[in-house]
Length: 116
Image 1: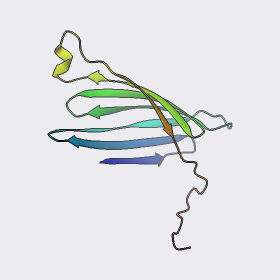
Image 2: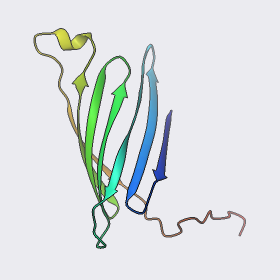
Image 3: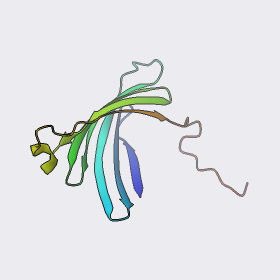
Image 4: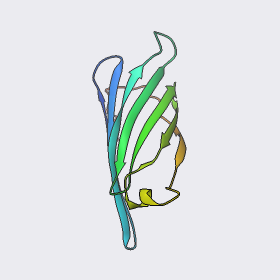
């Protein structure tokens, strides 16, 4: 299960919050967090800088840094382990790169009617 919401605070600031629950046989986890996006385009092509943090249940915090160019968002995150796994001689480490392709919003504020 996944839920996400974007909240526009101003013409330059947006907040994204989301949560995820995954289960496979007896294993499951949830993650919750969010990020803040700041428009850095200065009137030019859309560019937004995102910073945020998420928490994965009983395991890790992972900060995020991302940059949106038009409709492509590139990001990087790093797991900061907070579970018992962190007490080992070689604690787990994870760096993740992400790419999000966003659909353009040509009809902002318009909900298309399927019966027209």
